[in-house]
Image (tube, rainbow, N blue to C red; front, side, top):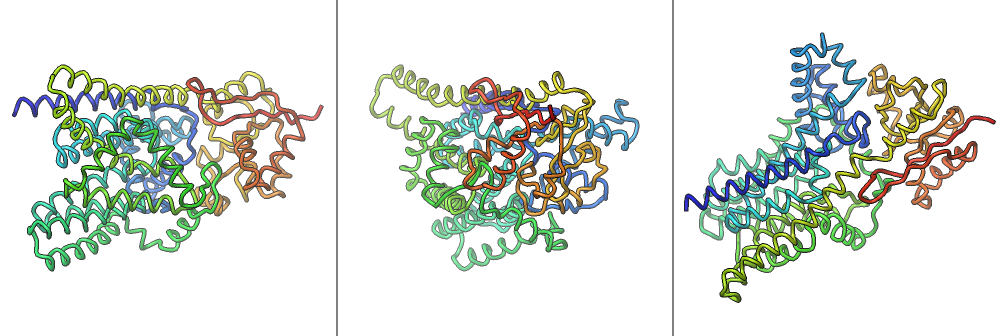
Length: 544
């Protein structure tokens, strides 16, 4: 028994090492340019706290407070490293360093997110092993390790992966509630629930699992019904207390919280506008869920679902939680791939249970051990190889992005005295001799070097942005666009607005007017398996 347990742990370690490689191999994508602008938003919150010093990140849209806490700690570590190694002689010089090359803070922040992602694999292994046995745990870990969606969001600074990790910790505490009903287990569940909410609002749904665990405890005669109700209510109140303890400025800056939430509640978002409930349901199931689990993984998931009634604990903990997440996401006006992450983790755990069911079927129907082994290996390879291939090609695309191609073209072909309008965070052009303009909504076109060097306060950026979800040429007020007169424009959003011009007619019209003033001199388009990113067009706006 001990030998078998040791073998399983070595197999888990191998899975974690493979997962690490798949995520680390392309984690530096885009740098020093930033292809995901929200990464800088999270880092600005962390920098604000360090400059204070304060526990107020100044933004609570996700709310992502814990994410910015982690980033602040990471930045302190990087600063200490820079000072000790002589890379920077002072904190001020370090700030200049990171504004010139944000890789110094973005890459360590991404590594921190990757470590949380590996933590979700480890926790999924623990939960699946607890629910269905050690083989189920290994299969769950294997599916998540190769999950292309999970890999992609493991490599960016976001709150989603961290929230998933805290959700799984809460589920672990819920298992203890179901088995022993102790106050200590309720307090741990409440703590991790509060931390999960402080990371991402929708993870308040994890409280459903605490209720499910209490119900299991009552049905198993671990707790009297009245005691379970009292402890459940107390844990709910404690979760709110832990939330405010972790993120006190949610209460102190309540007006900012409301404004940030209103800014997040957009009926339309470029590239993410959903439809009705059924449309969104199909989008999630046929998109990120199918991509993340694969065909074989989905088949194992369905096998696991069919046997869930025989496993009371996952039935009452996982099924209601997954259903609640799915209903919430499908009821929204927007659809996001990253929102499916908790569904993928729960799905992988249940698929681990499906693997156990499959093995039982094989033992009953195939008396020859060699045949069972051959089929087992074939199913495992069929589950993992397509996911691994997709993850690898996605990584290649991320490392060869159209935005970096456009930057390289600009350095070679645009005159050094030209003025260039850019729409993405092209830190890879900071050292270029040209003058640059960036569309900052109500503030008009501003010098992006002021943004990257910190001479323009974040409060000014926040006020100028208003409730806009995107900062690009299309969202400039017409009177500001008329004053924005570059020699060249590197347009990363034009084709996206073109594809959704019925939803964003004014933004598309603004681009049409801009392009009509010049001529397109270069186009960079994504190519499956080779280049990723949006279609980027470079427009020469100089007068003949």
